[in-house]
Image (cartoon, rainbow, N blue to C red; front, side, top):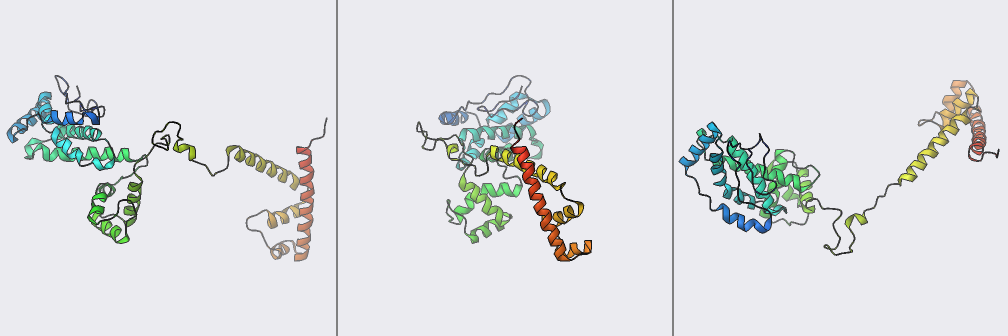
Length: 319
């Protein structure tokens, strides 16, 4: 059975977590922020393992998949998870959720721990705990994907600390000198520093259904004030239908012209790059004035044909 962490998020699917041949491991419940103090008190009751105890338990789990050994390894390091999670409180997420995600990382660290390498479990599992918490923060911060590269993640989780060191204001754009300093120290482009700072100033995503005045009953929601400056759908459909009708009428009206009139009118008025009178005069071996006269006459014929067709289509005679 899979090992379970605290809360609803601290659960690993079978095949991903620590497998026990006897029973699932239960750690102190962490249902929300109200039970956080109780949880922190309970995890202090688990004993800290010596290096020899930790090694023997890790070998038992590695060689025999001993669930009881894995349980002792996990519970003895729950305080480490809580300590690491507390360092990420500034991102506006419940500490209970951060601890739950950290516990998932701890379980993965225990699963992959190799005691013969000579390191303590805390040193190895710390990276799994941090990675799990950071991924959770990035997923929860915004629906718009951010922090997709290692450099961007480093920027996201170090920007606030570096701004504090530089005495930069938390609610304004960074000074160009500060941008250059941060970009150089973290090895990222300056524009990424500017963009990340602005996204963090705006905070995480908010619901458009949130009341505008702190939950006050009868208050409007944010989405009530959103406007779309684009055309209405019925206007777009009507414009498309009218454009299609005009095109069909033009094609039909063009049949009233002879080939020369049709060609000259098309090349002079119905193309993106119209030809000059001089160019067309060379095509037909006539003067430029003659081409102009043909163009004017063809346009007048086209107008009359369009008016006639429009009258027939839009104002049909009564049967």
